Length: 221
Image (cartoon, rainbow, N blue to C red):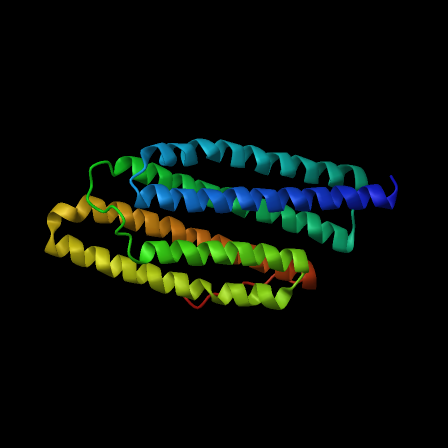
């Protein structure tokens, strides 16, 4: 197969990955808006849309396998395919976390929290920014920008710690809020994991550019 066709196939899986990332970013946004507005219809849409995210991930994976099987790529080309395979896995998991938030909203019918998400919305904004910036770093092949994204995970972790401490305080002072605060903690945990997966994507960008796979942010542990 001519090189130009091979390059088109490589570009196609990368374009598909970026589309998947956009779908996931929308899912995260919608899940938080559904939660903030106690919007059950919107929450159900997030849950249902996760099937589309899953289908897109597996379609890209099949295309990657086809390229490896038919082209036997080497060196840089193989790194692109490997990076895409790992990134779409993290993106699909992010979609699962957004779906989880949608399901939490469905559990919180009648609970008093409407528009009172505190640091949870800030966590979502930061996690989404990390996701978008990691994909920009991928497109631009910018390993320095990718490494900087990994350091931003600490900000999300710090917000999670604040949400946790606040929730525990509310539970102690007002035991009737235990269920609500537990649900909000589950939400915050999903967002913290989304940020972790954005970090994984950034690490894959570094791998793509440099050929070295390093864990770039281990300060929390």
